[in-house]
Length: 326
Ligand code: FAD
Image (tube, rainbow, N blue to C red; front, top):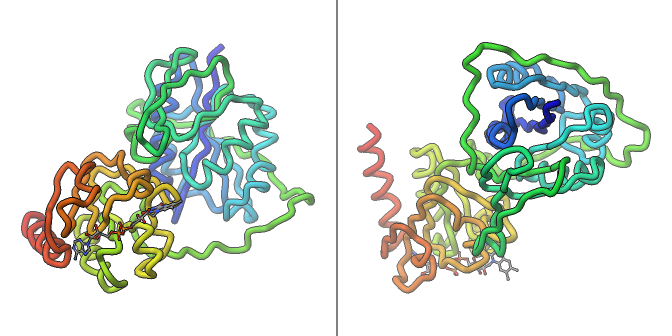
C-alpha cells in the first residue's frame, strides 16, 4: 500500500501561504507512484482557502474549522491534530520552516515517534531513498541526510522549492470535515494577534528584499528603500544594527537572531556584512551590496557591489527601474 504524506497548510489574510505550496511540491517530489497526498487545513472561516487548494493535485483536504482556531496556538493546534494523526498515522508530515512550522514540527514528531528534519532546502530521490539537504553552521556548510525509516516530519525553508503547479487532470481533492471542540485542559487562549509590520509582502517569502543597516542613519533613511521595494513588489528588511538603533522594528531583522530569507534578489544598503547578518541572507540567489566602504565584508558575499552613498545610489536605482518598468 502507498504511503500517506500529510501537509500542514498555513494561510494568511485569506490566502494559502506560498511556503505551503512549496512544501506540497517537496512532498510530491519525495513521494512515489501510489502514495497519497493529504492537506490538513486548520483555522476558522476557511472556505476561500479550500477553493484555492482545490486546484492542486491533492488526494484529500482534511478541514478543522473552528472559531477558536483563528490564531495559531500550539496547544490548541496539537489538540486539533492529535485525533487526525492517531487515525491516519501519516508516513510523512511536511510543513513550512516558518514560526508555526518550527513550533509545531517537534510536537508532531514526538506524537508520531517520527524522525525530524528541519529547514530543508532541497531533496533528491524519493521514498526511503530520499536524501534531504539542509544548511548548517549558519549557512557555511550543507549536510545531506536520509531517514532510516518512516515516519518523517520535515520543515522546508521558504523560497527554495518551486511552487506546485495546479492540477491539469481537473480531478479535485475530497474534502473531509474533522470534528473539533476546544478541550478543557487548554491553558492559554490566543485572543488576538497584533502585527508590528504593515508590509504588503511577507519578508520570508519575498522574491526581492531591500535591506537597510546602520548606514541608513534614521527611520526616515528607510524611506528610499521602501520606495524601491514598493516599485519592485519586494519587502524591506534590516540588520540588527538598524533595529538596535531604533530606525525600524525588530520584525524586519534578518540574521542569526532574526529571520532567515532566501529571495531571488537581496539588496543590502549600508550593511557591513557581519557574520550574524550573513547567517540570515547568504543563501539569497543574487546579492547586491551598496556600501560607502569598499572594504566592507558584505562585498565578499555580494554578486554585485556598488561602492557609494546609499542615499545617492538607491534613488538612482529606483529612477532607472521605474523607467525600465514603464
Ligand atoms: P554596521 O556594522 O555599523 O555597518 C554599517 C555599514 O553602513 C558600514 O559598513 C558603513 O560603511 C555603511 N554606511 C554608512 N553610511 C553609509 C552610506 N551613506 N551609504 C552606504 N553605506 C553606508 N546582526 C544582524 O544583522 N542580524 C542578526 O540576526 C544578528 N544577530 C546577532 C546575534 C548575536 C549573538 C550578536 C553578538 C550579534 C548579532 N548581530 C546581528 C549583530 C551583528 O554582529 C552586527 O553588529 C550588525 O549586523 C551590524 O549591523 P550593520 O551592518 O547595519 O551596522
